[in-house]
Length: 401
Image 1 (cartoon, rainbow, N blue to C red):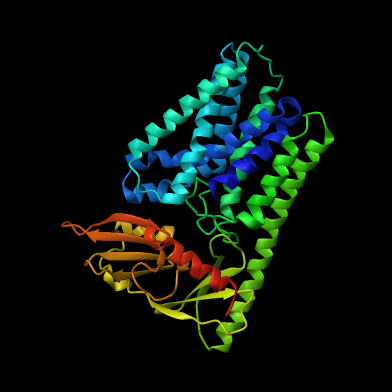
Image 2 (image 1 turned 90 degrees about the vertical axis):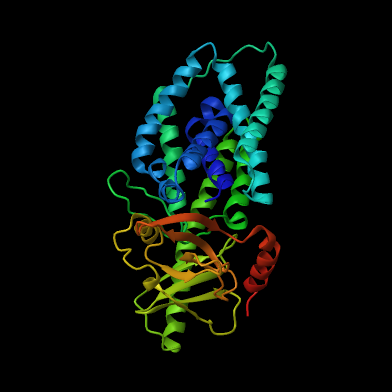
């Protein structure tokens, strides 16, 4: 799921475990815990494109990490709260955490083509300003010693890490829950990576309501558990809805006499109303979209596999990772510039015209002199100059045909 949803979930977990002891600080530390697994993205400058793709949502999203890191982070924060530097440490972490919010918003609005060094400088400048403001505001206010136990801290971080990974499992992207013992990618695919109306906004509302009350007031626990209950209920609804959508697709495939081996379905971005399906037959894929407001039969577009464009790639590391990542729902095409493009068909297409920029997840590869393949570029989502047009078409498609 998106970072905001994970922050909100972590904050609710922190409140559930430590709210009576720490009040709003419990929400803060839960939010920090809900953010930590996604910090695996900071390794991107150190890894190749293909290694970065395989590493994201890897070990930091596993149950193993939740246990080991939960014990470690819980012990670390517990010990730091016992030290005389606890206030300075808390202010530093709070400043760094808050500085990430405007940076994330700008990334979302303007794309991720910024210079990474410039982004880091801006983030540290913002964090420094926040730290200075908080320090002056607190002044000489006496430090209040926290009473949360070591076990409570460890339990909170474990749950923050584990629920983060489980929430990501409901998306099509999935996560490697069982590393280092298995690289199986668990992906239910019943919810979009960002679903603000169904999941995030109601959760935020409940959390804000809970934060308005003192730690001792029962209304605080009511609103926090209300948020957790609504979010879990919505996730269960998406699983039920996915099964309903699959039945509709199967019925349409039978009516149109399309034989197939397997099928995968998932909702489009920001909603659970418009669903995409990728269907595999022996020699090609079919893709179609279905909105709950549709009154016309589903139109299935044919996509040639073109796996023969990757000769002698059976044991190539790059292509093997792409096959694993896409669960073998992939096609290949030759781009206008002559390079090869591997398309992850699980996420569908934007408009279904089959052009090289129509696929939501696409990877540009090139064969090297020694016969191996190298992934040159990893593209996800529409190009920056097509965002408004694509989302306009998405909204029109949601309304049905």
